[in-house]
Image (cartoon, rainbow, N blue to C red; front, side):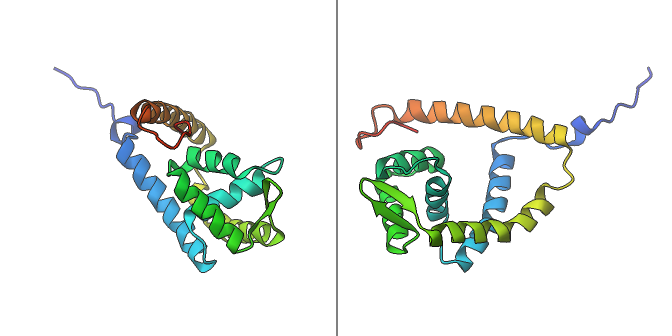
Length: 165
């Protein structure tokens, strides 16, 4: 009996799974949290501020709550508290029924981006484009499926009146 040597990268490379995804997420988030801490900012505050800064038009508080909830899967009351913190820090401002980022909010987000950019380049640099494309497809599919599962789990359990993420 003869055997053929068939060692491939696929047989030795770790398989993507929930644990690998979680470890990658928390490693990258750890870098961001380190930078945010230097600016006296939390992760939820950064997500909410980014949502306000990148919006094409001013958002209502409830629009921002919905958008941040979709990203973070947090309780709407906690997200409203985060928006209040950003308003108190004058990173957001209330304008009628809308919330707008202030210049200070835009500048803070830009500073965080500038500080994390070199680290991001080192982390993602050198990964072949085809690998990034494949990972992007897989992560998009996992996100969609997990959001569907979460919606099914929370259907009927949400008493806030908001739609599940």
